Structure formats: C-alpha cells, structure tokens
Image (cartoon, rainbow, N blue to C red; front, top):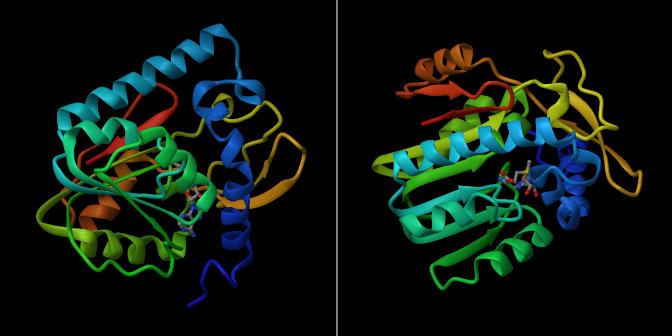
Length: 229
Ligand code: SAM
C-alpha cells in the first residue's frame, strides 16, 4: 500500500493544506475568494448552524479524538463537551493555529499522517470535519477500520462534510463532475495542487457504512453540508 509520502495526490493534498493553513479560515468565514455575496454567505452560515446544533444534540463526551482538525474550527465547538480533546493533523501549521485558538490544558496534539498513524489509546468519541471527502475511495474501508480502532466500547462518531455545490468553494475553483475523485485547488498566491475530493450521497454512504457494520444516521442541509453520527 502507498502512503501519503509516496502517492502524488496524497502528498500534494497534505502540501496544499500545509501551505493553506494561514488562509484556511477564509473558506469557512466566506471571505476573500470564498465570499459568494450576502445571500449565499448567509445561507452557508445558517446551514453551518444546523450542523453545530446537531453536534450539540449529539453531545460528545469524555475523551474525544478529532482527526484532521485543521485550524480548530470544530475543535472549538467540541472542547466544552469533552474532558480531554486530542487533535490530530498532518500539518504542523494547522496544529499550531488550532492550539493557539483553543489555549486549553485539556487539549493534546498529534502530528501524524493519517494514512500511516496507528492509535495507541481509545476514545469515547471521534470527530472529523471535511476529511472523509479527502480519503481516496480505495482507502474508504481502511479509514473506517482505523476509526473503529480509535473507539472505546460504546464509542461514537460524528462527522460533517461537503455536499456538491458550486458555490461552496472559491470563485476561481471549478468543481469537476460529481463522480470525479481528484480536483485542483488554488491558493491565494496562485499555486495549484491536486487533491482528492469525493462527494457522497447520504443514502449511498449510509448503505456502505452499514455494510461495514456501522449503525449510522446521515443527514444533509439544503445545499452545503452532510453530517452523520
Ligand atoms: N477538520 C478541519 C475543518 O473541518 O475545518 C480541517 C479539514 S481540511 C479540509 C483537511 C485537513 O486534513 C487539513 O487540516 C490537513 O492538514 C489535514 N490533512 C491532509 N492530509 C493529511 C494526512 N495525510 N494526514 C493527516 N492530516 C492530513
């Protein structure tokens, strides 16, 4: 099996996020190239609030692991629910922004390549935001095996990801056909990278996960997000 170090799109994907760390939040905050105008921005924030409410209703608790935490957008929401929050990301740049954002003794970090990392402890909850869509299709089952190995008995998972919508991404990004698995992303300085991006249909994703033995509930917001537990 290849690793992020020797597989080109996986390597580029991590390079892209490392280089993007300082400008990453523009996407979430609908700023700069991600600003789609007042109406669509408001739609985005309303739908993000739906997912945040679902996460609060899910009530993560105890020791929680967040995979591919990025700048800590979701870590901040997880923190009040947890006794310990472990943040894992392959990018030291992302981890340093996330720890500065959270400033909490409850938070621990792991810098690791998720395609090589092996858990050494188990958690009550695992969370990942906008990560499943970056897992290459051929690694889907292995990724979910990894998630199950991170979980203590009765442990639970919550995840959120992107729906296919042209206005979700930057104005100078083009989404390929919905069934493509690799696309190009650009930074503010114009550098381009190839990354994996897989858009899931909620029902199909739920069926695949049930086939792997998970009990799942997957929902979507009107345009932008799908989320599951
Ligand atoms: N979860 C955050 C959020 O919702 O805002 C960040 C999601 S961002 C789309 C993907 C994250 O995956 C980035 O922080 C990136 O550094 C991380 N990443 C990319 N490749 C990785 C790898 N091979 N191992 C671990 N993390 C990786």
